[in-house]
Amino acid sequence: MRHESAPLAFETPRLLARPLDQRDEQLYCDLFADVETMRFIGSPWPREHARRAFRVACRAMRRFAGRDVFLTLIDKAADSGVGLCSIQDIDAAGRLAELGLMLKPVACGQGYAKEILAATTSWAFRALPIDELRVRFATTHASAERVALGTGYTRNGYATQPEAMLCSWSARRESWSAAVE
Image 1 (cartoon, one colour):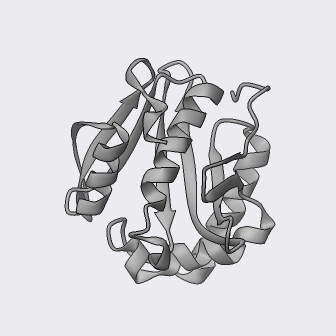
Image 2: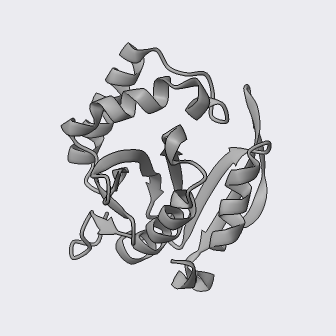
Image 3: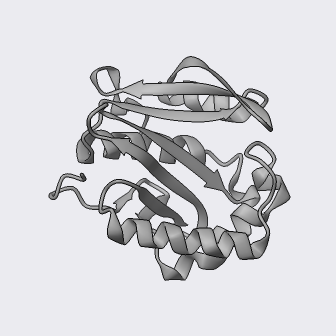
C-alpha cells in the first residue's frame, strides 16, 4: 500500500523516524508498561503482554507491507530512542488511516510531539493512499490537544471507550500545509 518510491524513514531537525525493528523491544516495552506514558491511553501493560505485542508489530511490518507502519523515534543528538509512532488501519478504499504517538516521559514538553506529528502527517500524505489521517486521544489530554491544533488538525468528534472519553481529530490532504514542520 505504501508508494514504492517513498522511503519508510524520514528525519526532522531533531528526530529520525525509522521502521520498528528488533533493537526497539526495550523501548516498546518500557513505553507500554509505564504508568505515566499510559495514563491517557489505558492501563499499563504487563511486560510479557508488551513483548508479545512488540513481536506482533514487527511481524505486521514485514507481512502487511504498508497496511500498518510502526516507527521508532530517535533523538539524533543523543542517538537514543525517545518514542514510537504508528500509522495503522490504513484503509485504501476509504482513503484514511489512524496515527498514534507515544513519547518517553522525559521527552514530553520538548516540542517533539508537534515536530513528529507534522512530519509524519506530511510523510503519510506523500507515501500512503490516504486523504485523511486521524488521531484520537483522551479529552483530558490538554497537551495532545495543543499539539493537534498547532499542527493543523481539526476536531471531528468524540468517542467513548470503557476507560476514557476520546476526541478525534483529522488532517486532510487537500488542506494540509507542511508550513508547521
